[in-house]
Every structure is written in C-alpha cells, then in structure tokens.
Length: 327
Image (cartoon, rainbow, N blue to C red; front, side, top):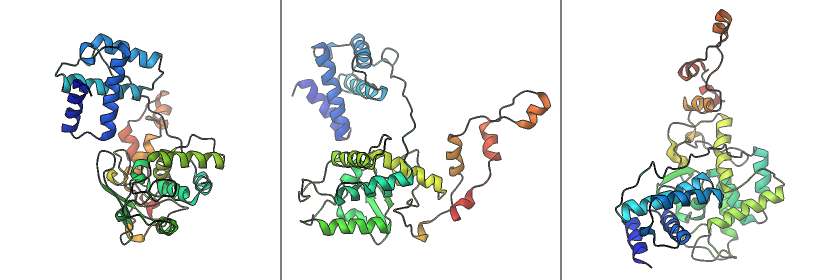
C-alpha cells in the first residue's frame, strides 16, 4: 500500500464512509493514476478533464459512473491532499433520469413461480412483498423477523439507516417453510451462504441477482428485469391499488417513496390495524406523471388562445381520492 493510498483510506475511515464507497473511491484514484502512469499527486485539472473525456468517449461509461469517479477524485484532492477543487474546470456530467421497467402483477407472479428452486422462489417473493434492496435482503438476520408485530427490521440499510417493513402472513409462512427446509439451522443469518446454505456467513447480493435473471428467462419475460425491478413493482402496485403512500418515506428507505402500509396481491394480506387512508401525497404522486400544464377550455373559448394553468391550480382542481383507500 502506497503512502497516498494509506492517507486516503484513513480519511475515508475517519468520516465513516461505507465499505462500498471506500472501495469505489480508492479504485477511481487508482485507475486515474494508471491511465497517465504517474502518481495522482502529480496530476492536475487538465489531466482530470482529459480523463473525463476518455471515460465518455472510449470506455462509454454512463453519466452516473463518471460522476462517481469524479467524486472519488474530488475527495482525494480536497480531503487527502488539501488542495482546491474548481467545479468550473471539472464539471459533473448531467444525469439522465429514466423511468424504471415495471412488471404487471401477473408477470410478477409468473416470475416468482418460474424460480428454479424453492430457495430462489423465497428470495424473489421476499423482494416483491417487502420492497427491500438485494443487499438488505441478503443480510437479514433471524432476529429481524418480528412475527408478533408482522414487521421485518432492516438494520443498516442504504445510508446506514434502520427501518421496519411489512411482513405479510403469506411471506411469513414461506420463510417458515424455508427455515424447515434447511439442513443446518443457522444461528444468525436468515439466508446462509454456500451451495447447501450451511455457512456461517450470508449469501452475497449476486446470488439474488442471478436468481432474478434466471427466473425471468424461464418465465419468458422480455422486459429488463433485475432485483431492483421488484422494488419498483412493489411501490407502483401499491400506488395503483390506491392503498396509500403517506408522507413518511423512511419505511421503504427512499426519499422519493411513501410508506408501505400494504403489500400487493397475490402475496399480500395486510392486517386491518395497519391500514390508513391515502393522503394528499397520492394525488401529488399521480400529478408527476401528468403534463405540467393543461388547456383551460373556458379561457380558450373566450380569447381563442391557450392559457396553461399553474401546477398549484391543477392540484386544487383535482378530486379527492381518499375514498380509494377504504374501498
């Protein structure tokens, strides 16, 4: 380990960065130095500009990947070398926001039933019924299952935040069948690793990714499917059912989502005590997918011109959909 790498690693550990972020930042600086075949402390803004163009032009990386590498270089120069960093000389690329691929409930059911093994079926079912990320699902512990309260405790999720997610009776029964099928009962991890699931360490997130890909191929689904697709389906099916997101996004671990009071069928049965009426945020979520402006027909008839209405006026004119939560 070189002296600069050791200094950067110490700065990352002092700030309690996650292991994934630490590895990504160290790898970004290492690849940057290897490209120019010089130590990184001898390189400057001109080299960063050339390297950024190289990442786009030759390596064909996405804007988010380039942004991550620039973040690692920025941390190295500012926090490790204590040098200045000019945002004008090294701008971050503009992000591309795309809508996720969403499966219908029938496609989700077909995907889960097409899993090659019962173990993989349980993994896919848990992804869809809870909306967990694959890394969060892989590191679930036996003590995280609270059957008395019908919740699953997620410890150290994205951003190192803890939260609770719903546990449906159907998923609870599937987890119990998974437990009974294990040759060796684990002491800590709910999904132990190795081929026979007898290890003292959990499965890797790659196992869940491969299970999802293989099930999608067997089900004949042509859409792009990966574990995070089931997380999107979980949130979208809740919204389409009208059963309500509220203004508390922490229960699904996202600042852009709402609380998962219900689990969508066919693998959901939510206790009545957890049901709450859908709030105004349902209407706001729906308005995101509508046009920002709509034509005011009355004004158009009077003047012969189009008068777009503001977003605030559109919200006031939208009907109250709270009754959907109790239907």
